[in-house]
Length: 143
Image 1 (cartoon, rainbow, N blue to C red):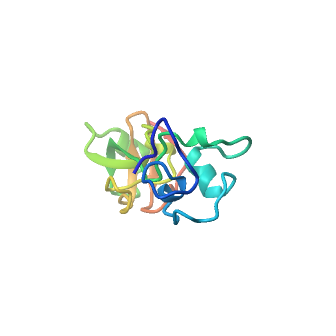
Image 2 (cartoon, one colour; image 1 turned 90 degrees about the vertical axis):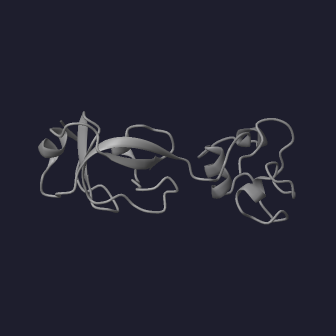
């Protein structure tokens, strides 16, 4: 669920899309404050001043972006092999809405972000990188 983009918001309360506690899967009456790590993460405010208005339109549900990529499952192939492939033959999902998947910390096979992408070399046509199924195992390379 996503919090409303205007109007009344509160830390607690039982109204879905108006209670920050409920958005964070806490009880409506949980003893919470805006400086808690989970609250700051939801608001996108790591440090400094934070207010209720920072929560308008925020959602604790993960948002993953679909991206078409070049992929070579031969882990020994390297950048040159994956970069030389014709077309973009694979679909992956990355957290957030950043299109440069090679700089993301996670790479998924599904939009829910519950299944990591297969290990191998990935390219966006400009850069390439090796993923082992859990994390990047090479520095960002150029095609």
